[in-house]
Length: 262
Ligand code: DGL
Image 1 (tube, rainbow, N blue to C red):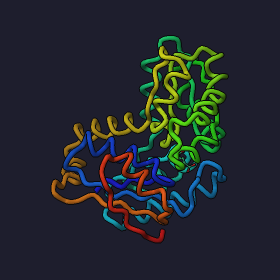
Image 2 (cartoon, rainbow, N blue to C red):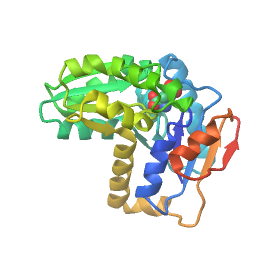
Image 3 (cartoon, rainbow, N blue to C red):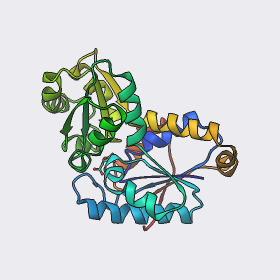
Image 4 (tube, helix red, strand yellow):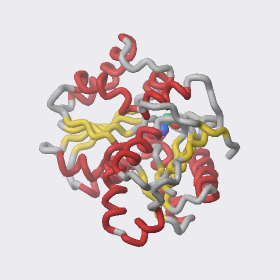
């Protein structure tokens, strides 16, 4: 199984993209809703949670781990790669590779949680992928609660998005990375406010494409993970009331959420 974890339901945007691009590869998902949000926590705490989440997914039979949370990837990807022998894929690298290749001017914006932006990991990796590029980062801490409230296109949400994006518009970026797994749900609100000419990179789509390439190129990994007919499972460490509606919004169908302790 492909193990995927996130602090909550945002990572389901990644699970959905993987499901669509890699049919026949069952998923085991963990949304750590008991401890969400990660984006406002310290790197040490996020690493501790990510460690527990990975242990849980491996116990469920995962053979590869996708860190479907930018905050967790920023704080814990190095630790997890050093600690586990299994392949670890994170949401940041594929989005960086895409942005670095499509940006014409090399002026790239990144939006994410405080943990993600403060880590500086996007900037570092963008500089590695495209030396000399100009990276403009903006933490948007109010966006995750708005998405969780289901306020995707409300007037207030549009105003807040506009305010967060203004400094990036002023820098005339031509590419914007959505560095948080909740933000794809705000694409319709973000698009017109950053400007129609700016290319938006959705890290959930990019990580799914990256995983598909890995599976296409690695016969051993493919045979280890391919199990058509085996159902995907979705675990959460808490079930707050809006979670069913959010999951349904992301998958376009009812998803059975299993409560677990991590
Ligand atoms: N999933 C997190 C991320 O991608 C956002 C939610 C949180 O702060 O936990 O950064």
